[in-house]
Image (cartoon, rainbow, N blue to C red; front, side):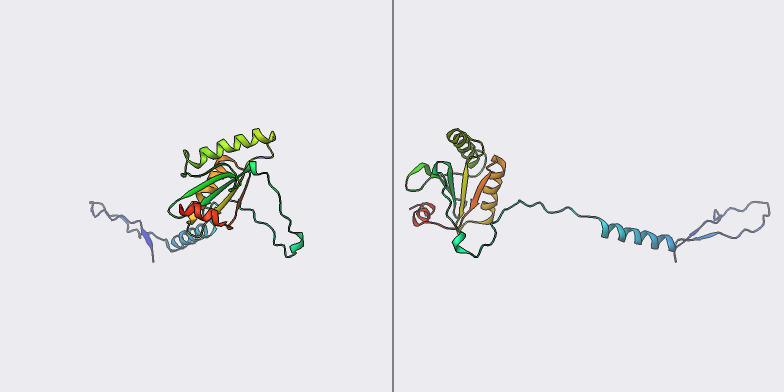
Amino acid sequence: MAELNTGDGDGKKSGKVRSKKSNSKVDLTAMVDLAFLLITFFMLTTTLSKPQSMPLGLPDKDDDPSKNKDIKVDENRTLTVLLGDNDKMVYYMGLLATPIAGPKDISYGKEGIRKELLKRKKSVVEYTGNKDKGLIVIIKPSKKSNYRNLVDILDEMAIVGVPTNAIVNDFSPEELKLLEGK
């Protein structure tokens, strides 16, 4: 049992005779129990920091193939980014058969893909004359690319402010040759 003694335990004896006082004791068991209850309560009710996540819009599942219609997109607005192994990234603007720019290897970061995205975003708005019809980026991660590269390119999309991007896992044989460097 936890207790607090408040007696005169100074050990000095004086010449006067005093009446003997009993030592008062305070029982602290209830206070220790209360402290542990409060600690437990606050540990259980405290919200921990929530993980930060990036919003990712996915299409609704549609079982009716007759409703699936190909959407035609202006090739002058489309930039395709191919992600390969060993942090390799290749981009091209437009169609691969008749590219407006590229195909070209590029690095991650401020002086690499971000600079190119900003330049292309500005040129697409000048081309269309409408802010709503901006740059469309198609991201194609290969099976050899790692998850970190995909997150990095999605971060660049958020930093630059590219409103429309898509992750596609469909590669043409020409695109695979670009990634392999042949």
